[in-house]
Length: 425
Image (cartoon, rainbow, N blue to C red; front, side, top):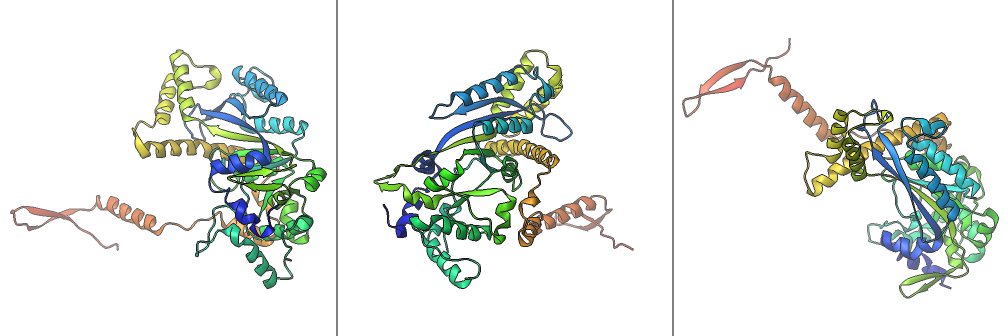
């Protein structure tokens, strides 16, 4: 096994790119099944136009087989193809509301033993904070300096946190202390997961704009995976109110030290059982949206539940195609903006539904200081340049209504016209 002094340094070298993270680490740590919920636009993204989207289908991809999961996806796709001829909410105009689809899948996956959850606003690879691309002013990687930083913090604030060295006998005790550091915002080797799927959804939706957001489901045997795997059920100290509020536990990447062998250009995990995980990804597809609407247009009729006339279809198609931009980076930016408009309304819809179930983001921060920091982030500093530009534009606009007079002749013998500025009385 590797000496503990080099553990972070060596493991950190495999977090250099998303491809390497996936192939060298996450594919060995997790037994993944990825489900993509494909969303298409059926109306322009305006709140007064409902519905604005439709769930087209679900796609399952994995290098592993799970016939029960595949059957579940096949059944859902049959309902979607039937365009709402089932029972209950499947009869609504939107075919299936995204929230209720996710809710039904949560229930289904729980029956299969998935009991911990994590939400992300984008489809990033799973990376604990310590291994993100962080460097100090001297160019030193954060993961390479973490241990000395942790030690120094424990000396400066001995009443707050205790230093526990990285060794196999003390990993869970160390995790308790790292959880305190993470609670106060210091990135560590711990990755937050929650026992509550709706809290995970809040993390997916409540902290910034979404883009291909994903909800992750983990199948964890709490006692066995804590003892023989990489899960840490941290003791819920008074200083860790947030863990209690968020129904939290951690995937503890320190525990990889028990299994890991670093070989030439690859990592091997000995006697390690991967964690079963389902990644549920929400993806808005512009090309599929345009194709679906054109097919509907060419069929010379619209379905009553779609509530779109031929004129409306033309408008939505033109909006999605972004006719004003033809090619290059501007076109990519246009597509990103269009997708972003749909994601924004989907995000609002899902947050409203969570609120109906009494799940709100501010409840995740029971500490006074955490709550104030969270609330302060609701406000942004205005761009003074933009404000000044707006004032100038307004002055220019108002000046058009001012009277004119002729000034002195210029060199060509013509008069120059100037505006008269009058003081207010």
